[in-house]
Amino acid sequence: ENKRAPARKWTKADYLLTGRLFCGSCGGTMVGESGTSKNGNKHLYYNCLAKKRRQGCRKKAIKKQWIESLVIERAKKIVFDDELLGFISENTDQYYVAQNTDTSYTDSLRAELVETERALANILKAIEAGIFNDTTKQRMDELDERKKGLEAAIAESGLRQGLRLTKEHIFYFLSKYREVDYSDPEAQKRLIATFINSVFVYDDKVVMTFNYSGDNRTITLNEV
Image (cartoon, rainbow, N blue to C red):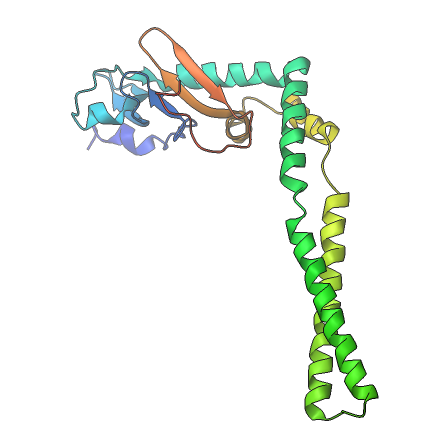
């Protein structure tokens, strides 16, 4: 009972690099683990999942505090580098513009509106010719409602395009990371989620890749 007592007091650790930390030897995911030394001290580290499953990888475990501090410090350098932050903002803006200049959706709405107005005009001609009954009225009401819906959708689409982000907005948002408390675990999580794509740990080096593009997939060992 006494031997187990320290474990009950131990709170669950938060591994900040979960899903972003990889083994430089085999490319496998590195997962958080904890262990207790002979003197009862608790140690936190990341270990290669392939090694844990005895799949041949020999990568040594790395200390949690060391690798997380290294990644956070590197991300902070980006935040405080005006030139690099400007580069990110410029390229993010270009990506955003490219994604939001596709007019195919609005064009399809406008084409459908033209067809709806043409159908309404034909109904009116029929009414003028003396053809008016319940079916004609129902069809006219349906077309009229459809026309209103299309006009609203086109107006909404134009509003979205008019309220687009600028690189100044993006730079401002990213630069706000300069004001966070970097000792706060929640702030550390946001920093890593925003900037860090993947971290590969080798025996003699650490390679980090960053989120500089709109591609959200994780970079692989072969690409590194």
